[in-house]
Length: 136
Image (cartoon, rainbow, N blue to C red):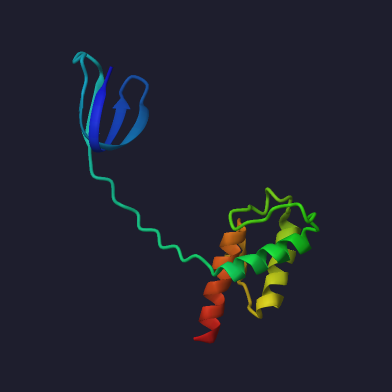
């Protein structure tokens, strides 16, 4: 049995080259010192993720457009976390949603940006960014 505490540890078992990552570890100990385990402690760089949440009214408009384009029933709940695939959208539906968003917000969405949209929140964030860029 192994015990561990603290920063970040990567473990590799040599016989089967199985790698496992345990985060938030600073120290560890093994009761059986005859094992073939090799431990390497190294700092893990912190990934900075900047996320600008779109205004609630933008998310609501995107939800309405998605519901309209996909002809969803009024009972269907669409939120910022809703994924287009989970709502039944195929690639053509996604293109139509993007076209509806472009028309509603008077913006132009580049193809690369359109391909990165997976959720309603992704679309709303992109719209906020493009509207801000357009008005600057």
